[in-house]
Image 1 (cartoon, rainbow, N blue to C red):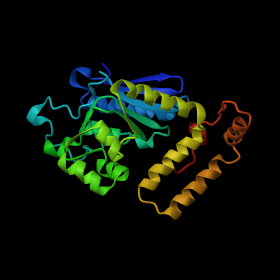
Image 2 (image 1 turned 135 degrees about the vertical axis):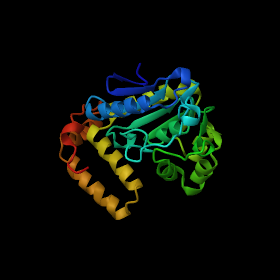
Image 3 (image 1 turned 90 degrees about the vertical axis):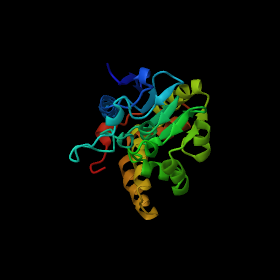
Image 4 (image 1 turned 90 degrees about the horizontal axis):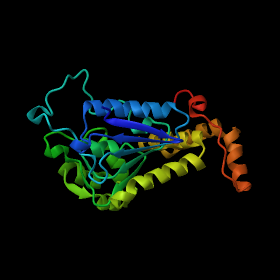
Length: 269
């Protein structure tokens, strides 16, 4: 049975973490299927936005590592094959916006992987924690980078070094997530956001802007970001979608986008 179920409905893809009997605890199978779902969404020009959520709405988004192996949960791994990245395709490389609909508790690696998404909506009463240090390991999936870039070093240290539990409401106050909502509103809000992106934004423009955002977060100077933006403008200027965006606005009608990320993505990015 699949543990990361991909469903594509029109221009919006939904990836559902599906181990509800284990509160969607992360497993090797889930990681492999999750990465494959991201790869499929990235390659499919029909997909304009991706939503990641958890089965058993209101109970859990992802409860962290599966601790069912007890003392063997974090046993020694092969240095040649083990990666703390957890999934082979992180959300930031997907050339479509990825929205985490954190509809329940998100702990450990579940929260680390949500931090790789571009937008995060969370249940107000969800329990969140980078609990790794309370289990004898440490945060993973590049959390030491994604959390710092989201909320700064001091607040990141508070969450990562203590492993304390905090609410979805506090996560929004800290700036860790975009919005905190009642649990039953999280997925609808994420889907509405995805649908808005799919209908009203140009595919190649969004893909390039996303890449620029993540490149800028890696430590580029303002001048370097300016050069990235300049180079990316040369990709989109004069193309059909740069004409369509203007004309749709002037004619007060929905845009009819033609751009295809798979065909127009510049070499080297």
